[in-house]
Image 1 (cartoon, rainbow, N blue to C red):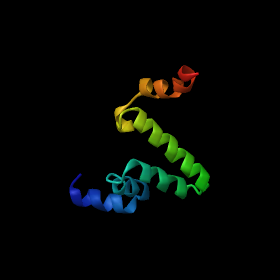
Image 2: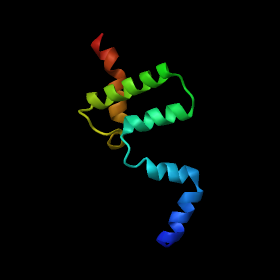
Image 3: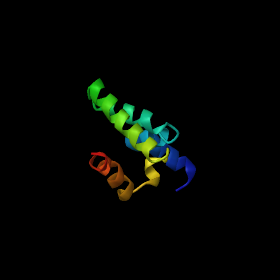
Image 4: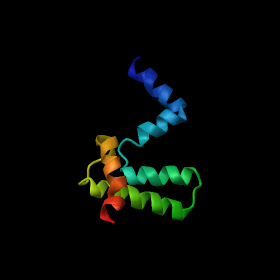
Length: 83
């Protein structure tokens, strides 16, 4: 597919266009945008952003795309290990 056809296809497809536009948007801003599009409460947004931020900091500021199941299990098991 040539770039002209691809560009016109992306303009007509809202979902693909939204994805293309969000490539350079920071992760937590993407989370906020998605939560607001779903009309969730501000408290829910704050909670999601807080826990995602804590998870990223716990993993030494690695992007969640770089992590897998083991990192998630280690973070979720943390409260059980502390007690």
